[in-house]
Length: 247
View 1 (tube, rainbow, N blue to C red):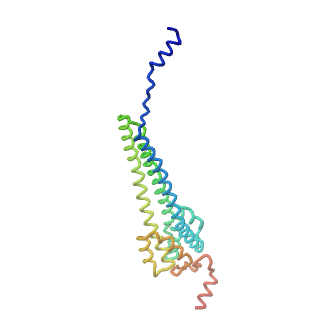
View 2: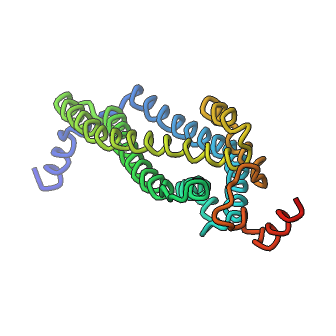
View 3: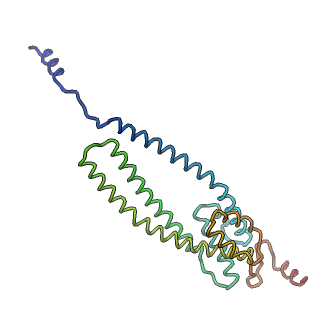
């Protein structure tokens, strides 16, 4: 038998069977993941589009109030997370005019909001990546021993996401408390007689907050005048004196 005959005999005797660990159920799981991803993306886009009007109304209201009160950087009202600084700043302005003390809630709110949102994103990223990794591995791997290792890694990832989630929860709850304190002061400065009602409604129906802030943006019915300073940036001490003399 020459070399060519031996090579042909070897090729016919070789087993070309490969195990790709792929069957109909795996294909179904992959298709489900693709559909699920498209659905989640579509839902996210719809939610963001629905939130735009609320965001615009609240930003306009906060920006107008901050500018009329003479606060620094009123444009932060348009920046997500940073707008907590403006909300706290408007509340601090009212409290300082009333008591002469600056509680600096704006600083605490900004710090707590940043910590809370950053840790929440980290926790969610760890959780989501772990779930996707586990699902993809289940779809393409049929090795029982390897699946046990994946389950153990998934459990560790879940434990790793718990700590930042807990810290984020406490930070955001504290920020929410300061938010409602500042919101009450905003309502009190604009419409003192309706402040409590607006606050209660805002707590139970938070969807109304942007529209209430927008509606009260030009009102200063309960705003104290601090040491003869103008109630808003548009007023002047001379105009206030003349107004008091006319009365």
